[in-house]
Figure 1 (cartoon, rainbow, N blue to C red):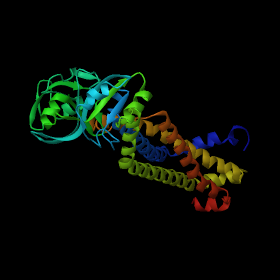
Figure 2: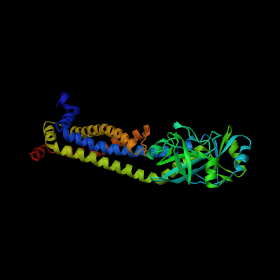
Figure 3: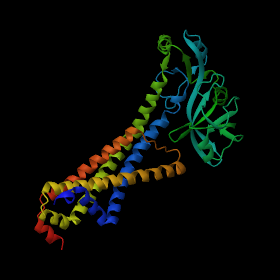
Figure 4: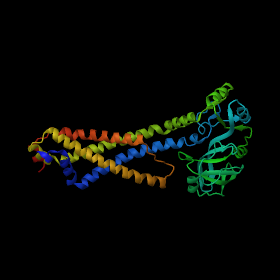
Length: 373
């Protein structure tokens, strides 16, 4: 075994192309396992992105909330309405605006639907919708703007009436990219929400703009107010989502990794067993145990690379299917996610290659010939 015939690449290529159907099946199984890992990891990134959507678009530098509030939607509370004017007069405050946030179950003609309701002051430019596919932001007490995907799902259009707390609200805008995880945001005015709740003497929170966030926050806290930054609300929403979804998603990713490793190991071990006679011939011709181990590892790595390519194709198809079938489940891929999955694939290949490589180190050429009959 000299020259080009001694290299492992031509031998590995020959082993892979001898049984193309089995090679394709093995790569497909590996691809499915890797695709599942990428899908679950991407779904978790999508969940994290969605749960902080509103926190990231508040447009405020500080948020005054009721004591004990961590998340705007999970911990709704009330503040006295005069607090808005009092906060606006605090030195360093540029503007202050009321805000209400809450989850609601809407009674629609064809059933119930959960939404995240946001009531904002349209004159302030804070806390309202930030992107539209049609229409405009609510201005009057009986107007509302709803998420475009939710409107399509429930057959609402601009000009229709949406019942909220028993009040028919006129849809004046369709907003874009304004949904929490599985929960669309519905925007209305604080005047309209106060009237529907019969709570004109209170507000849920106060949005504050200032050129000196640290100084103003210190003054407001000295006055007894509970103050949060948008970054703190963002982190609180992430922590809440992690408490709810984090453990199951991490468990599923771990199961996918274990399944992928077993699939790679099974494919590699089966192929080496099937090729035992050919490998015995190579050993009889002078191939060392180290050379045979390198052949097994190279074949396993090649299958994993093919499986990775298959995973990319499957993931693209699955993402498109989910975007059409279940747009509330976003799958986002980041550089970190791809790098982690690539590292997992490499680890899977190395772990899976160990068993057949270890077996080949003890391969007896004569027994290989006998087993191949």
